[in-house]
Length: 219
Image (cartoon, rainbow, N blue to C red; front, side, top):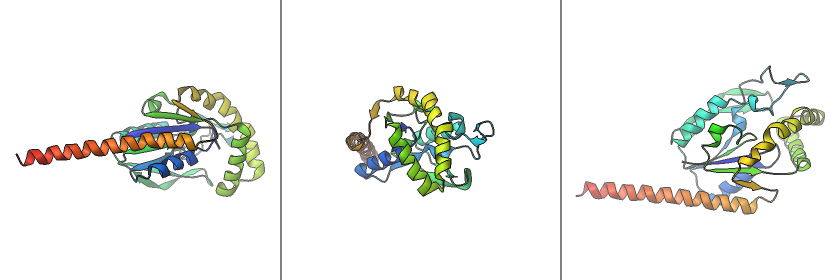
């Protein structure tokens, strides 16, 4: 199974980039998986800034479960991915079954943070977008999709998003195989071409193995 990691700051367009790649590949066995699904079941009491949860610190994520799931997906297994509710900041009871897949596009702010997980990726991508653009995108998304107020978004940005980005996230750019700017279409074409090549190669290998098996059966 082919594993593509997509990192970048909040609002950098990771999910959009993943969808661009998927549209160009147009293959049902290529799946987009979100690191946001692996937030801890409830906000950690140890990660609070001015009384509010810090969702932009690496420790806000369930790393053991994420490592287990990516390792199992890489091995061709199926996993039950958590469903996270951003309006309540809680993990729901229901899960979503993912796998087996030929390719996983995994996106999240700390995709390249953990060394063990980083080593699972066949391609590591970092989306580098200026902070003002990321903030505006985040503002629109959180108001529209997560029921947030303007004041709360601005406060969170200065309390946690911005400082955590500089302290923890920006340094992970150095681990990327490919750093992509705001114009992502060409990069999406390149990544999609590599994914297509891998999918077609696996299909050819599978057909060859089947032919060998059938040929042996008739000897």
